[in-house]
Amino acid sequence: MPTYTRRHALAAVAASALAGSRAWAAGDPWLTLYPQILKRIQPPKFPNREFDVTRYGAKPDGKTDCTEAFRKAIEEANRAGGGRVVVTEGVCLTGAIHLKSNVNLVVRKGATIRFGTLPKLYPIVLTRFEGMECMNYSPFVYALDQQNIAITGGGTLDGQATAENWWQWKGRRAAAGDDKNQNKARAALVDMVEKGVPVAERKFGDGGYLRPMFVQPYRCANVQIEDIAIVNSPMYEMHPVLCRNFTARNVTVSSHGPNNDGCDPESSVDVLIDGCTFDTGDDCIAIKSGRNADGRRLHAPSENLIVQNCTMKDGHGGVTMGSECSGDIRNVFAQECQMDSPNLDRVLRFKDNAIRGGVIEHVYMRNVKCGQVATAAIEVDFYYEEGEKGPFTPVVRDVEVVNLEVKKCANAWSLRGFKNAPISNIRLKNCTFENAAKASVTENVQGLTLENVTVNGQKVSA
Image (cartoon, rainbow, N blue to C red; front, side, top):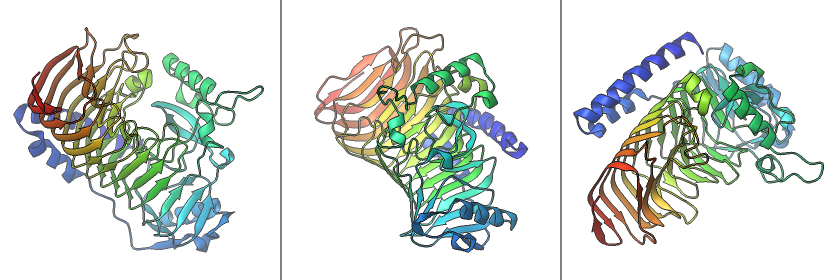
């Protein structure tokens, strides 16, 4: 990580942790901490120079490989001090695109960048797979140690992922002589993480079947993704890792493959997700901070995150924290969102266990309207995957939900802590849950406060 990024990131971590604690103690964090975070998050600015990819050999015919044209245009824009690399029309077929500092990739409305499905188009780079650092296939759009980068323009990024290519690598049942699935490599990576194998030696790629992410800025500062549609990804759609000052605004995500999370800020500070629409095969938004020993090794929390004005359709959770949360998550604000789908499982979700550990704290949600969800509207689950079988204590504390309306759900909430690690300080205020099919679940919770909360028309108390 460049010196400026590391220094600012560490300073931000310390300052925001202190600010979060003070804000909680001093009063309403929406009036104290939220405005400070929002003020700091600013999109990058770019010189008024354009680099049309067709000048570098790109042919927007949907057939010609434009990988080299994108590389040349981005490098020239970077050398010139920055500018816009532009796709004006048609379909540009390409492999990995690696952004550089001060470059805005602009895909005009009606234009598409379509990513090839051959793994050889994605060279091995430093990346994260399920919260674990490794050397694996490049994400489709990637940047490492860059600043002031963006993807904008009104067009579409199409990953072309289907059950016939990338998606079959997840959990595919191997036929005789056919082992094209991630299971062996994923288990090997988990083992390498626990043994402390150096990241440079965690080499995967061909034969490993670990899917690449779609858009992944890694150790970057001042990142913007705005007015773009992202469809059909191998795995996570937007995945900022170890980033500072990240904005996703007016992005439409539609992708229903396995682990197709919409936006996964991981170990990142000062993040804004605003006005986006998520229709996904996994969590719409999943905030993460590294898995198990890797999360504890780096100990880079995700903190100071704002989610607002978003629409959540299909997905496992609307706003989720975890399960990779070993490096801690704090200061999350979510407001003014609309959620509604029989295939949306939860409104607010926390998933952790005694293998992950980590602290999730200071989470605030308000003014969210939900038509229906398939399971509990609010869920804190310490029994996710490995459950109690581990030495690391999961912590979820100081969560406040105000003005949540849910028209249909399995139950209003399911809060399941451990006896030796209870969930603490959960506050619901002015919340209405209709058509809840089952009773709420409250196990090992200290400090559950219910103020003007109704379930199926009946006021309930803690």
